[in-house]
Length: 203
Image (cartoon, one colour):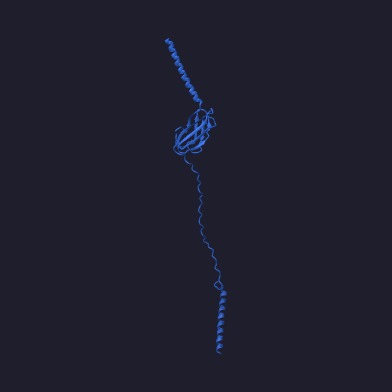
């Protein structure tokens, strides 16, 4: 009798263990059946020294290529960047064309799981330094060589003074002699005329 009772107890214990094992296997299978986020970049609670160039969400199963939306907001809840992620296998990637500001940030995501049901979540992280602004290309101003002042030429144009009427310095010698003789003749004639007048007055 004792042997039968012991056998029944062992059978019950074995059945209980089997039920526990089956339940565990069932829970694991159910967990694998539902899509879930298994990793992200940035990771939850990450503190980055520089803004990331993209947001990457990794799932246990490949999500559908439609219906995904990723938004990054700042501490005030203001949207910094948003867009539809690109499905790459089990990852959904959103490239960031705009540099994220420094401070606490959140990634708010929503995707369509492989069975069509939407799943979503929030990933907080922080950036300690903003992205360095790109400096615009500068063009150096064209330099022009200073023009040297034009030196005055040593040769100066001189104009000959116009000869004045009555100036006999430029006449030939023969002309000068003729003028002198004429002047003397005029003086002699004047003297003769004066003498004649004096004789006439005496008579």
